[in-house]
Length: 153
Ligand SMILES: [Zn+2]
Image (cartoon, rainbow, N blue to C red; front, side, top):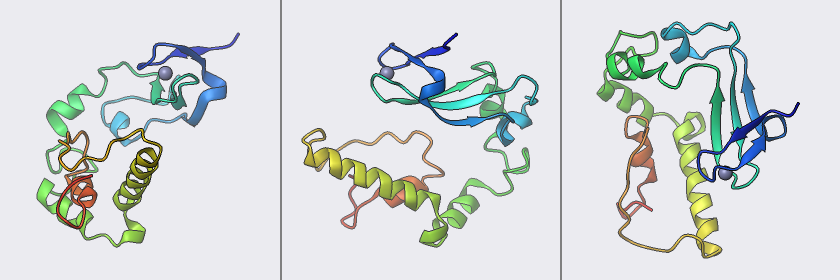
């Protein structure tokens, strides 16, 4: 039996096995913090066979991490990975050398993709985009997306 998933964007079905990009069989640190165990656990990054949207499939409930984000995520020392305040974390991450920074790697990827889309005519050139920061990594991502002229792409 072929297992399928329904895309969040185009609502088409794709086979899970042939569209899995990455698969995990143990919970990450966030899931562990809310009590999720490796019993019957799975998490996969899949790509829609129709539109290409990358999305996550997982065994946990959709609201399993709500308590973490609502009550613990921003509190220093409340969780094992939060040892510093937001400001301290921002400074530490901002000062990482480029070769150690995932943010700089991601920004390079995003900028290259935008340039590619602009060359194909799929992303218009504008000088006044408004930007919504979703999961911006302590704003370090925004800092690195800024161009030399102080604008954002
Ligand atoms: Zn899709």
